[in-house]
Amino acid sequence: MIGKKLAMGLGAASAFVASAGAALAEQPKDWQIDFQAAATPVMANIEDFHRLLLYIITAVSLFVLALLLWIILRYNRRMNPTPSKVAHNTVLEVVWTIVPVMILVFIAIPSFRLLYFEGTIPKADVTLRAIGKQWFWSYQYPGTGDWQFDSQGLSDAAAKAANKPRLLGVDNPIYVPVNKVVEVQTTGADVIHSWAVPAFGVKMDAVPGRINTTWFKATREGVYYGECSELCGARHAFMPIEVHVVSQAAYDAWLAQAKKKFADNASPAAPTRLAAAH
Image (cartoon, rainbow, N blue to C red; front, side, top):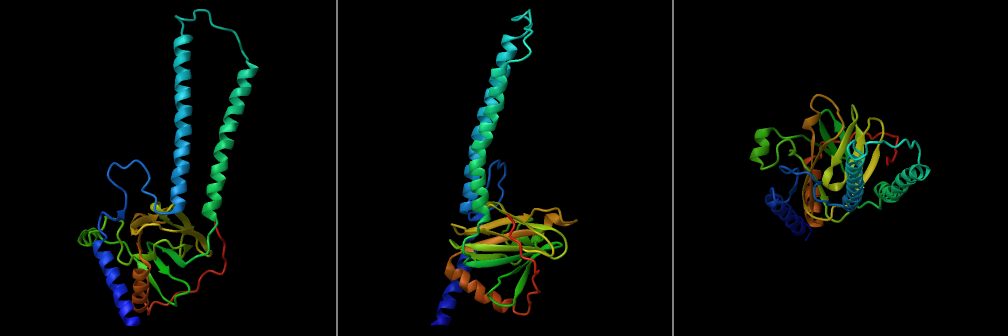
């Protein structure tokens, strides 16, 4: 029975990988000016906050533009040959001090709420450790055994052959189950790196000698791409991240297969200093 379930799971994983082409891939698009589509609750909240800021910025910009046009038309030399000698206006000065303060307070409330949401990690279903190295990522799944694997960026030719985007595809992608909380622990083996996946709203520094933590919960299956977002050396632009979000059955099948495939890669000792970064 176990062998049958494993075979079914492996079949589901293979079918998913075979069908995961450009239609399922979350990556930058030509002429794109907005965020990638949100795939997690955190990123959805980030987009909501971004829209709020956009509305405020647009309103303030239009108001300032209208004010400038009014001043140009009303107080030019032809319309106002005798300039006013007024130096102060107490009411006006109080208003232009209080209104910006009120706008900032209005922005601060959802901002602090978002920071709290990002920094408060729910009970994790899967723990993933990302180790930044010059210039690739190594991954561990703590609690599943003593194994790890390296994830190297593909050459242009290999990426084209695998139907993966240039500079984003990798040889050994990460797999996580859909609708499950994934705690990501980041650390660096040499210099500071940064593990970032835009569609997840995740960006966390990987610092040598410590572990930082973040999380995501992908709500739809697909292939998601990211990159190191900390200038870490000459090949900084060549250490991409590829995450496959799959069903629980496909994830279980991949995990069983990965344990065997990478059984000889023992996990090195993790840093002893644990610090949750917000």
